[in-house]
Image (cartoon, each protein chain N blue to C red):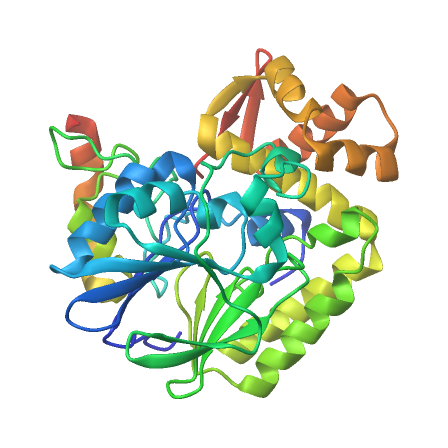
Length: 307
Length: 77
């Protein structure tokens, strides 16, 4: 593993999987931009982290790579505290304006997000000046059809959101609704090969420089998922259950079933792939998570395992 | 690495490893992310705000030095 040196005008707050990484960029001596704001339940700590690192600057801008709850959960709080403007990719703009639960992903995944309003849009192809560098927004569908990643050609740094992690990438959500996602994810990985970043700041996990290794792993993983959409759907269900367990730490199995019964993605996955009673679908997913060591199940209670 | 179901899960929801010999040294974060106002330590991982904020910019030695203090902090928290 090679040494990772971050550009001097940039800070990365890496936490666990419930909150995405937050990238703080110092625009000048007075102002800064934050890329992604973490999960809503971590808002107080996110605020403290940002305040601590600002060094007397003001947070003037929040940019979201995409509007999943682990990336935009701190938007409302940080906007209120700093008066920062919020910049989002255009795909969900209408849905944010009316806070349309059917179009936003929070209810569908059984997750939470405080309502916020955006102030500006960043469309693929457009450039944002952040941390004394130009960052080009690039369309990054696959994990989420409306996601962008941010590319600094000058430093050859990619803020990759959930399009590429050191070991994998975000679940391919469009496929579980019957939309294309695997092909888009493949094109995304090919584009990153072409860009040739020397540093990737992922949406989760530590920044990394062994980019070609990560791309190779991601392509192999994509091969496996694309060969079995059912495996992808199974994986989506497990990721969402684990995510919820990170938030609540432990919950009665019956309450877990009740929680996810109203989550649209869970209904879709079961209806499309498994067609079993809903509680059985959940029981099987929890059992697989338990077998992998991600959760524990005992006395009718599911508990998170930190490993 | 073999793409076993366990490996697959780890790729979807990576869990903190306690193997401190690897680089980068893994983050101690367990997604609790709530500061205790009395101790000044995170209730999940035991780090201070400065240690969490600086983590990504630290050397592996500095990260191991923090790890070495965490168990004691969480016991007394």
